[in-house]
Structure formats: C-alpha cells, structure tokens
Length: 68
Image (cartoon, rainbow, N blue to C red; front, side):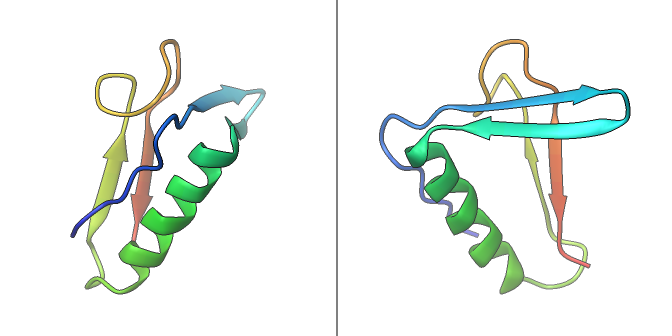
C-alpha cells in the first residue's frame, strides 16, 4: 500500500482517561484521510502502525489503524 504524506504534516496522538485524541494540522488531517481511504481498499487484516519514530510527533502515543 502506498501512503501519501502531505508536506508539513503534524499529527499528535494522546490517550487520556480512556479517550483517544488525534490532533493534527490541515496537512496531517489530509494525510490521515488519504491513509484511511487507501486502507479501505486493502484486504481485511491489513494495518498501519504509526508512532513517533515513523510519522507522529514526539511524545505521541502509537496509533494502529486496521482494516477489518
């Protein structure tokens, strides 16, 4: 699966009191939307693992997106 990242994207993920919060700038939201659309076209079980080492901002929680 090919992922398209918008230039200048910023994505922060936090989990507080059992609630996941995704905060992103416009480029980050467009990037996530593109990833979700690409993931929707994949086979069940396909997933994307995003974390601070490969795409999210420092101090972000990891985010797993999975096609079921």
